[in-house]
Image (cartoon, rainbow, N blue to C red; front, side, top):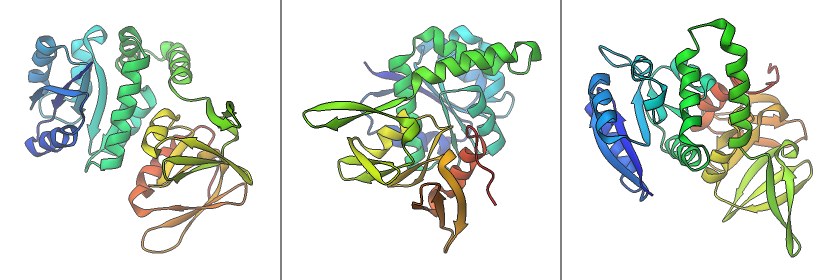
Length: 276
């Protein structure tokens, strides 16, 4: 089935950029574009989209205010688009499907879209509404925060992989994500590094990243993903790149193009290490 998609941004070039990125996605049907939150509210009533690309900062009414105004029962899956890192971190904490920082990075856009696909495949509409309810109710009452946090943890555990299913002779066997230090692209496969050994898994890096908990794993380079709690230190090298030194002794490159997003994700990671 097509994913009916609505694009909401007050800047025409920003809407065009999202539209062009979606043009080659065969499962996406763009049902409309809106330049304001008010217009988007009417479009949601008219088109009932499955997925919403929503700018946070818009004149008159912000994207967050729009979500509050339309109510949890009418909110589709949401990918927030923002130029402000603090809004991105807020969205990350409350479990909106995903967020994208402006200017948009193409790889990051694909990850967000894959996460939206997974959400729409695996979670029923009522659960998606529950995630948005967390966002809307976050500032309403501190007494409800513990129950919201519990619901979010349960949803997260069902969304992301807990085991990799790798080839083993003529069959397959599960490898817990908890034992994997880092992941490396290898043609049509990826190598799952567990200490000094590795396992091969047939997958692309983008597909695999979308299925991993972003509070546990982060993309450090086009060809590498790192588990945050295996990091010992991050050392600058040259031209904006850095080296990530892992507890098992491996050294992984942190490329300049992924540096800011990686550090941002590390700041919100589960049990992040204190880095010098």
